[in-house]
Length: 364
Image (cartoon, rainbow, N blue to C red):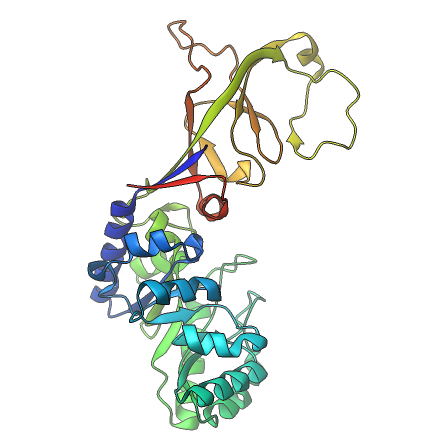
């Protein structure tokens, strides 16, 4: 079975590094663990007391993941990081201390659920700043906040935005400054103190390091940088974070010299993907290796092979690669059946591999 290697100590070091980095900038942060989909082994292995002691909260976009988190550590503060479905208001209040919101009717439902439980639920209201994903339209902000401030069992603790996730709108200084100005407007209008301006994510880290983030942005939601050591803004390593935190190994289950071009009429029955063949390929052969994972496990575009090899095709449970003449520079055979091929997975690859029940997960 193919296996995903998770270097837990390096991930823990990344989290501690970020905690100290944010502390030096007087910023609080939430660790976003959605890439692990609430895997209990991960939660127990990574989120030890020494790792989470300086984190404001741990967040996810799935209620089942927050429920698992509560089962592993009932005392940890949790944050639900996408607008909740109204029908699940009771569960949101049960498993999340804080939630990000954009709908009045949903917040009203959260208020009712919190009242039934005799508690106060904290919310951060997200503002639309151009990404066209979640966010209250800017012209509706005052009326929106006014209504929410009147709810008896809701505490508004902040204002936020989400940039760079769908269309890739960059969190520039001007964009984030708009967010801080709206915070000041609301504070002055209603005489309320909004504790958090949450406009920072992994994509914003290089901007913070350059000093081009308004100082009022005092809360970050970080996932990719903590687990992969990079910022999506430039795809580069951030500071001294570890980037070699995950490895993916697949087993060679067949290796034969075969033709390059399929023999027969190619119809629409194939369920996978294949390469484009050139006319000169018809008379040539090469060594083809079949690996023990497929489309159900991960997208080939999200993994990078350590050794040079050419993708040939993929089905639901197998992937085929071209090894050329399968020899080393000295003329020896390079790979054989039973050998493993090493890949480096990106964020989306790890998310899918962790969700696949056909992939072994190994923590080191």
